[in-house]
Image 1 (cartoon, helix red, strand yellow):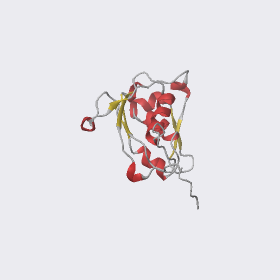
Image 2: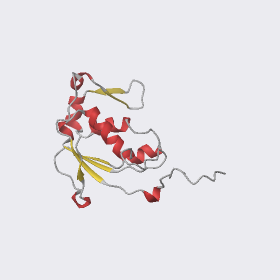
Image 3: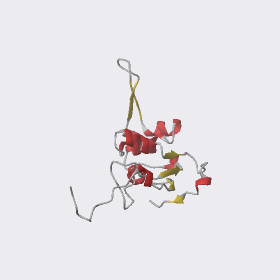
Image 4: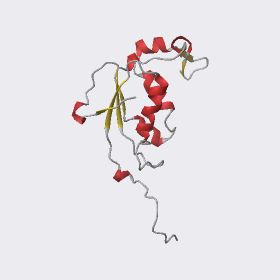
Length: 147
């Protein structure tokens, strides 16, 4: 038993206060944007960060269709998915994904930077991605986040 009066406080789920942030992704590089968003979803920007507690904030990304890649990734990077059948691998480049599902690029990059556990899936639910400049979360009065 530790009788030391100095102890590091551990954040509990009940003590978490969530903020709302809005990010304008127009012209930003995908990976750099996703790493900053993942840190906020996880709560690493808070002084009372606790790894095993879901203490992150909500993030709204607008203009997701205007994100950019560095180098030639727009035409050479491939997103894979599988139908579940033999030979069912399907690949797609970001240029085509952007026309079909513009928010997928930011969501997928952020998902890869979060923990691959139950808590990581909960964090991803707090990410709201919109292709255009408008979002329906004005009632939450989100703070602008500079990246």
